[in-house]
Image (cartoon, rainbow, N blue to C red; front, side):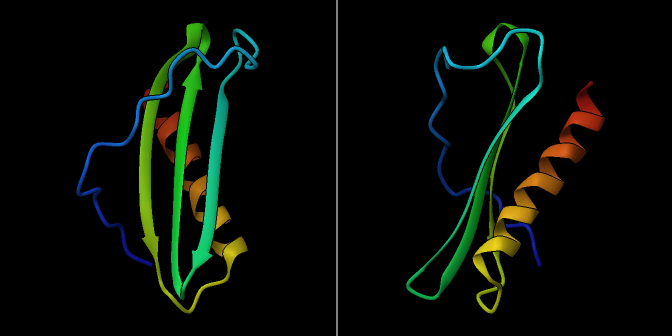
Length: 83
């Protein structure tokens, strides 16, 4: 697995009303499309503040669930750094 920095800015998540206040929320997605595996995550804290957004390229031999695991692990690492 290797980290690939995004080549373009990630879209900003605005006012996710379904998120509960005073809770750390992790929104993640991993997918395999056309043989390419990638993952993305956003860590959102109180008052809808986006703490961290990232996207990753995962080895193409990986499964979709492995991409999901990457986003969870990386998000938890960011929470440890910022909180």
